[in-house]
Length: 202
Image (tube, rainbow, N blue to C red; front, side, top):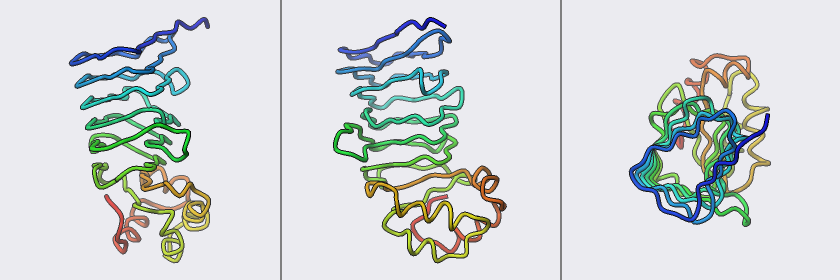
């Protein structure tokens, strides 16, 4: 399929609704673009969306189809609200070449799984509630987390994995039902462990 490039850059857009929904389009939110108090509707897969040094300020981001494995590492997000299903997304920056940032954003109306928050102050963020849960500072705490009696294979697979994560990982959010499915356990068994933990949001 031939794709049309749709490029937003070098301008400020305020109080508008941008629908990134065309099936035959490749969307670029590029250099020196600022979206302020806009509604950004996403209905394209991650490979059709590119964000490079764009600033989103007090925007609402609506993922109207599941957005999977998208890296927001070149986006500057401030005071934004997210809705919809975000699976395997990365927010913030974890290496020197990344220029992304995130602060004061609200995910309480979103459904997140395997989503990382990197190089940011998670104290400014609002995370979704159960059945999602967020482990705070998991890389620094991985040995303590590993010592807990996690059900299924969460301990040897998920928790051990934090030893190799970039040190800038400040939080990871999971969907308990999805994690349970992958790990051979139940959401209820996961919650039993979470109730013993500090540094978790659910």
